Image 1: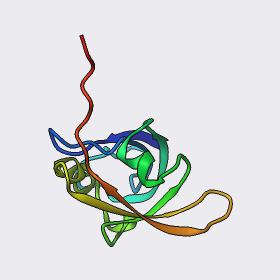
Image 2: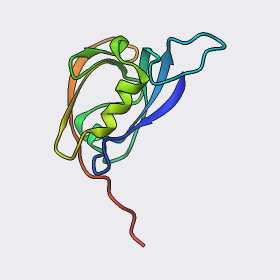
Image 3: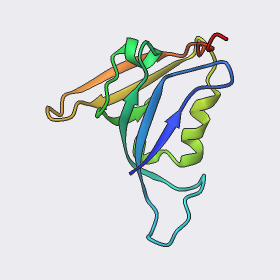
Image 4: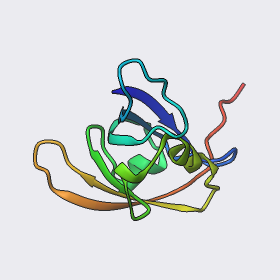
Length: 116
């Protein structure tokens, strides 16, 4: 799976990096129309909205906002970046090892800017 960082809109921020498994052949190019087969959270930024909501590295994403991850394309996933501060993204995830499913609501925040 190739890592893909997902953040929300120009002012919004989730703080999650994903590993994706996509439905593409060996010689196929990945495009916005490429369908996603599986998604695993690779990293969660410290003090990010995702960490505060309880998402954890190695959680397998089953649904985002009520839509099965296998229904998403790369282009639709990129649309997550258009969420704005205060919007909510709901993830249904399965914990690695236990397979226990849980629903986690993440409220989009503003990325903290580094100080000079």
